[in-house]
Image 1 (cartoon, rainbow over the protein chains, first blue to last red):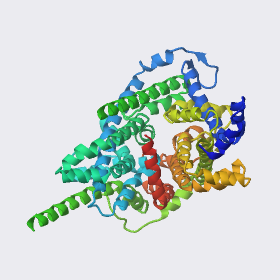
Image 2: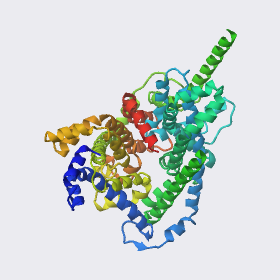
Image 3: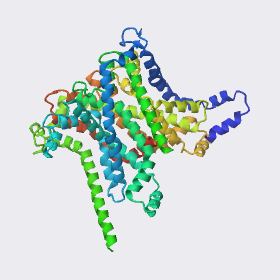
Image 4: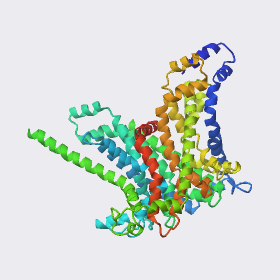
Length: 308
Length: 283
């Protein structure tokens, strides 16, 4: 607490209108926070509540709303495309985990070794993909994946592999998105791991070496347990981002082929801004919100239990 | 002796393996950038040949010219510069002010308001998107710069970050200035803000990337080409000939759109990494 504030409090301590005095004396604080809270009330709080409200209505944004009770929610769970979108999103997120949680950990562990020269340069290179925009990433990867004789297929065939129908098969289109998104964000996850690794006290590891522990033991008994909170953190953001995947399928595959990469948010976007079913989309948004929330809770609980 | 040399050999092997692994990672990370740049300098016939050519026969620059002649890239670039600059500065100011108030004043309601702010960081943007859009419709702000700038200004993360940093501003300094007759706003602008420059830099870089690359929001609120931001201009350019994409031109535009972020990142990456770590430790 600031000394200024303490001094002011001392002056007004005896007064019975203490609260009012504190508010009056701290008027500047309210001025400082008000722009944030005014904007937040409009575009955050109001929107959050209003979204919930319209999720119980039928509304196209132009004509008056009609009370629709739970029909939007009921319709969601019989909407084949939404169910496909849920399934696709889950599959994509599941396949995200190796490339976003595991590979970055390997990279960080390798980079943290004392034997590595030029750590800064490596880190810079790994991080570069993160600064590009979704549109640019999609443009480059659509070049890599498009056509039978695509860039990536050329190398696969060079190694004796088959031609892969990257963007024209429902499964491989998903894999294209997973690869794109892994490339895009592994640097960010790697840096988080690296910070975690560097926060492990060196004495702990040296003591273990003195006690005769080998590399594998040190990694599995010391490094991994100490990194557990960070592994949970990266998997939470992987799942959060995975469940909210929009730009990549929108730009790279357009949700196809035959809804093979239709994700929840992409479907929501189409219902809201192409189909103008705002109430239905709002209901969808709340269902997605609930899924993200539950996924985060499960992981926190799962992660917490392991520490006991 | 043999034991020492054996250890040296195993260390060398390990070092080679580590560097190989990391170099493969680097190649994968860099390859798309390399390919973007090289192809932007190729003549049209050279881009889609099999096997792919790693180098151009003679560099051509007409792709870059074509970007400006055949698309609204320049408009998109300027719009993005303007929107990014305005949004980033305003976010910094709002976050710093709120962060300062939370760190240095013990005002009634402080803890409640702050907890509330932390709680809102969990809300995904998709939940507030439709009503925010309808608010802009009501304000008649659709297809305006305000629509691009105003809704995203209140950053809970930014306020959180600034509050953490504002704690490090010494109370003695603030008290001394107050005794000298400085008002609350002078305390903020002349004492707290200069001290908070490192945190402001981290936050500025974060907002810069977010704003520069933002696609979703401009897609929703912008209609006319003269208001397009870079991602929208790129999308338009890419979709011009869907079955016969002129990759040279598209790659040239992509590279130019990415260049500012690359420069900012390479110049300021030290602050950037600091910011990421703060963000991670929050979680």
